[in-house]
Length: 135
Image 1 (tube, rainbow, N blue to C red):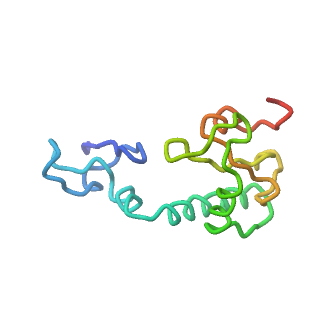
Image 2: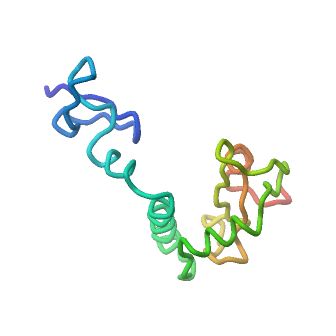
């Protein structure tokens, strides 16, 4: 049985060979796997672009229409909406906005600008896949 190590980024238990060496760590391995280590070096725009790509794939699997929602549109949306629409908290580095579908994709919502709002992580997590009137 191979010895595994848990990545502090993705939280997966992986083979020790999936971690870069780091002599400063007690076990001699970095706490992030190779894949997560690559993400650390990406710009915020590139990380957001990757997240949007995953969201588009999930939307497509759910039958949502295809939408061109790129990093530029995300940045414009962030400039236009400075507060969480549910609790009103001001977005900051400590409280970043998260993308929320007003009508969730798994309930027939589309991945379009008209169906997207920015919420703080706390509000987005509590909303889950509910509609506004169910809150």
